Image 1 (tube, rainbow, N blue to C red):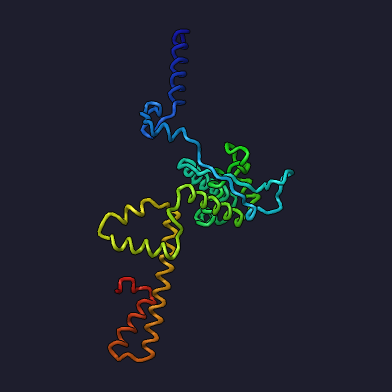
Image 2 (spheres, rainbow, N blue to C red):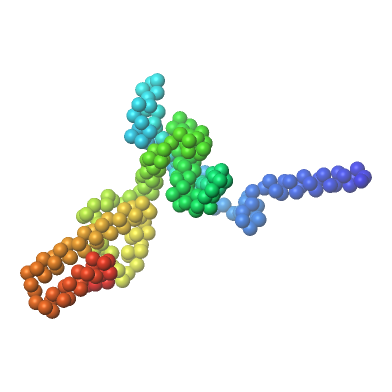
Length: 263
C-alpha cells in the first residue's frame, strides 16, 4: 500500500471515529443539530433541585461528626428520567448477576418481584442521594456497598424520604384532610359533565393523587360497612318480608364487594 493510500485510510478512520463520538438521538441525527428554544436552554441550564434532610431516625442518632453536626444528613436530588432508566437497567442486570451465582432456582430468583423492587430502590437511591457537602458526588460509594451495608428497613426509610422530597418539589395544593376530601369530591361530582375534573386533577402531583385515592377507598369501605350495619339492624327489627328480602340481598352484595353500582 502506497503512503498516499495509507494516509487516506487513516484519515477515513479518524473521520469515522469522530462521527461515532458525536452524541446522536434515536434517529441517528447529531444532537447539536437540533434547534434549542429559549425554554430548552433554560431547562438545560438550570440547577438540579436538591433538598437536604436529617435522616437520623433512619440511619441512627449516634452518628455525630467532630463538630457536632449529624452525619446522617442526606441531600436528595430528584432523579431525571435518564437516571430512572439507568437505575431500572442496572437493577435488572444486578438481579441476573446474582442469579448466576445460584446453583438452583436461577429462573425463580430472576422472576422474584420483591428482589427486583429492592434492587430498583437501591439503584434509584444511589443516584438521588448526594453528599450534602458536594451534591455533585454520590452519598454512598456504590450500589453494591449499599446492598452489603444497608438493610431493607433502612432502604425503605431512605426511599420514603426521597418520595417526600418529590412531593415537596412538585407542590401539594393543600393538605389532604376530611374537609378537603369532601370539598374535592363535591366539586368533581358537581362538574362531572364538564372538563373541570380533568383540569383540576391534572395539576396535582402523583403522590398527592395516590394519597387522595387511598383516602377515598378507605372512606368508601367505611361507608359501605356502615350501611351494612344499618341494614342488619333494620332487619333485626323486622321491616316486612319484601323489605327483608331486598335488604338481605343488598347486604350480601355489598359484603361480597359487588355492590359498587348500587344506588
